Amino acid sequence: MSSLSEAIIHLAIDLFHQIRKSEKENIFLSPLSISSALAMTYLGARENTASQMQKVLHFNKIAENTRGGAAKEHVEKPGNVHHHFQKLLTELKKSTDAYELSVANRLYGEKEFRFLQEYMDNVQKFYLASVESADFKNAAEESRKMINSWVESQTNGKIKDLFPKDSLDSSTVLVLVNAVYFKGQWNQKFKEEHTAEEKFWLNKDTSKPVQMMKQTNSFKFVSLEDVQAKILEIPYKGEELSMLVLLPNEVDGLQELEDQLTAEKLIAWTSPQNMGKREVDLYLPRFKVEENPFLFLIKHIKTNSILFCGRVSSP
Image (tube, rainbow, N blue to C red; front, side):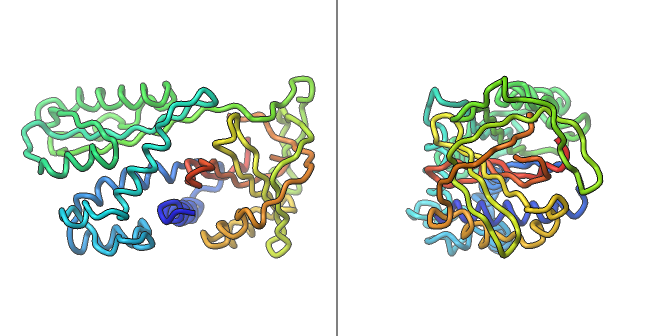
């Protein structure tokens, strides 16, 4: 596992635990998107700001990344976080017919503000980002609509209003935008005739009817006796991406599983040494894997990078 993928996993778990304090329903986030967007900011940070960002983003776990900021001798040093992101984003951008995956970065800078050219060049080089001028000072609303339009196009229409009205104004100087879009099919398709209405249990006393897809097949699987849960890996077509499902053994065991979840445990649980193939009866709710609430992660297998993660408590 690369040091960058570990940093993204640590950030994913940190964010998940913060969000779940206030969000009791479904959770969906993209650690890759958040990490790469903040890394572009980190690229321009100095001294204490860079040090604090490095700690929060877990970039201090990456070899050759003991210094932060945009100092030339640091940025150009092979092995630092920016070089790792360059390799990762280049890998994710490789074309394939198996699935749709788009990772796009763009900077919108106030046209009257003078940005350090070295920073702009490095953002393009390491984060494959395009740089656009915007007239926030005189036309903030038009600039907001322009940015939202780009995000909508990059996410195939799924995100239509990233920046709500009045979120940008004449004081805005720089907007960093990251958009990740993924659409894939299961490597082993669910047959339509095996889909039927069944109960999805929200807790021991409450259920709701859902269209439940079924199949029996061989999947990577591990049973975790210490936390009374199991993990199943479901590959997408092409077997370059997969969904990891973390399912408690008991209907009401999700909170306990979440309480015990750490990045170190997740890395150990899902290691190749632990995940072995076995025949599994899989029940997966048809929603945008099983009959109980669960946690999930969608990862890029070659780079072991977490693209999306979250919780399904009510499909």
